[in-house]
Image (cartoon, rainbow, N blue to C red):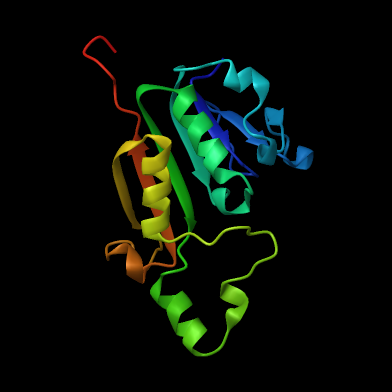
Length: 164
């Protein structure tokens, strides 16, 4: 089995990853609803994967905390998870909210609104270390996350001892 996971891949699939998505029309490697957790064949692979990516998919999951815990278990020591999502603390979201535009906070397919602070805390709760959260928008990617409409988090599953 490949050593990397792409969760909620949609059409952004990568050949070196196991691409998982609920939509069979995008032809992923595994058709699966991540709201049920990770697929059984993935859950059996504890400390196996080197990398997991979730691009613009975590905000669609009702059980994102369960998924993060399962990702932690699936990653090998020093494995990396990368997550991108909308940043509801971002400058453009704030401006729209001040104008009375509540649509930025409610998209019917989004079940949670993340901020840089919330995403970092959830990754910490799942056991990840060395967490870096930064802006991920084209125009604001070099500014602090609070200015960016999207955020990118990178976290590591630390080795528990010298032999790992």
